Length: 286
Length: 248
Image (cartoon, rainbow over the protein chains, first blue to last red):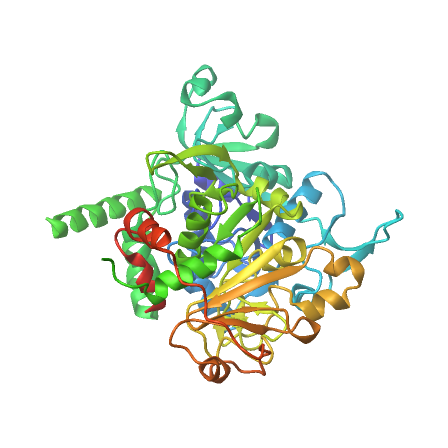
């Protein structure tokens, strides 16, 4: 399927989980398609990076559920930062492990899972809806009852996939992409390359087949689709581009210029503009 | 003859010392000075420590001074090691109080922060599950505050108030700053000055701390790097001398 077909299946107000971690293997082509759509009032669940920043900048986010938002090599995500300082988005701030546990609970169709993380911290203060639960066994220990983070939609990006929805990651970390898919009603996987099923194992060992077709609703082919986040071994993070993205958040005018240059057309126009950026940069270095 | 240790090198060794005696657990240093410290510890007195490349690959020193892969810890595995207590992290702190409550989330009112920082990240879970230390490259009253704005990492007073189970796995081992090394051996586990770096007076540390700091009658000087440690830092771990930048 295409990104626009995918966006056509989404509705305003949905809860959307986004795979990857920080500025690593994010389904950015899908995020860009949502940013360019008419969708509004989304709840976004993410180990946040520029996916969150871009959707906030496009005015798509009503509520964010996360433990952090970071560009990794640039610690603070500028759009997230501004939106928080202007109180423009609702935030459910959780410990990173609580987010994992909430996705696991949702994937297992449980209302909650018990956990120590959160106890004694202000995560309990800023999330007054969080409850604790006591062990029914002899220890009688008290835990945070991390509520299930059920998703309407999950978006993940893989290195390779077949057309049926079997997905392969070839980088260092699966992150929680399989859990995002299992926690969602509908899950969409973008990928660098679509290959015949018979060729999947030529790319990596069987353990790299993280996503199976029972987890996935649709596959979208998006070459360079994680740009500017890392998608090793296909490509690393585009640090130069990330710097220009972060710098563009400094003023309304700078962001409008960035948007006009990179985000005013579709994915093909974006990739062409990135190619111009890269060639200008390499000429400048010569 | 080699020159004497710099402040960064003293801090690296002080960071290394926080993992002394930990055995085979995952050391997760945040920042360059703690990372160099953890690698120094692994190369010398704590060879059992597990260390990643910053992502999911576990690396161990090889005989030729290079590092080889010994394992794989993707985030899901890190979370399990964390919950199992087989980890000791050294995090940063935008704010920290007398009992070690730490904030990396935001400054000001949480509902509309004056400065949004990282978010709580893994600090709540880390602090109630396994040993935690902190690295503060600029010891000041802005960091060492009476009360933090958003408790991310849990301090001793809050851990104790959870009852027996809350404190069960809670330990804040140490804080290393550009001025001193601190621990929580004060009254009721309050922060205590453990040692001062060369050239730093106890009053310098007290002035840079926004609350009353416990201290022994005589405050020792922070341990200086040995010649072997200095050689490892300068020639093997950080030949490009990036270490000074974090203290600039």
